[in-house]
View (cartoon, rainbow, N blue to C red):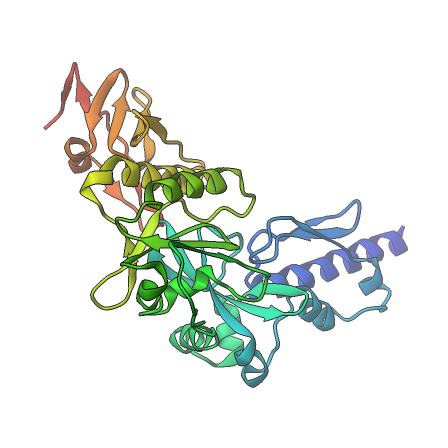
Length: 335
């Protein structure tokens, strides 16, 4: 009986050590399952969980320190890691990677790029390297090739082989502008999935078709990024594309991206007339709302601008809004 108790204590202590090491490495969802004697977690940047049997560690066959290094694949020394860093554009990412806002519903992350794996950098790794986040982001951007194209075409298609990080080039100031000669006008870019970047000229014959192509790729890809179009501003920074003649097309792309990113948080938007977004607030219930063009409050449709004074914005991204009181009396929004 005593032997069995000591064994359970030893197993629990080992699992506790493993959970603490994973959490310090930026893994937020690690949990211990006692019966199969394993830990399950999702490494930052992965979409599928990792199942880690603990028996080999209890028997002394493997080292926890070595394992964490193998699982997360991050060099412990800044000088070794720095040349491997690359910036990436992503929506919501599992775990707690180092990130900063980049574009609506998209953030800039940093990954360690190695031949057979790509691992997201975490704030904890920043501390290990004794390097500031700003330095990490700057180093990652500097490692991109900033590729220069030759020749011209009405539409330029970049398909990533896993090493080029084409969509990440949108994070480089001035890079998109430099494609103007290749496409014959102001470049408009689409990044519908992580491995595809499409660029054509504003006002060109293929712009409307590329909106449709980008939407189709975005909706069917397991690695969807954005159906929106992007251009460079006066400072060379990438910003959302605007066009009054294509207003509804542009707005539809924005709405589809919003719907995808909010759904990842469990917040639902629906599409109205193919381009406007609508959220729902059930009667007499506290609510967390995504930002929308309008809200169905009970049976009353309320424009977002009228509802905002009754909401409180949280610090989370994308923007979320909370409220506890019911804002509608009859068909009127309460003042």
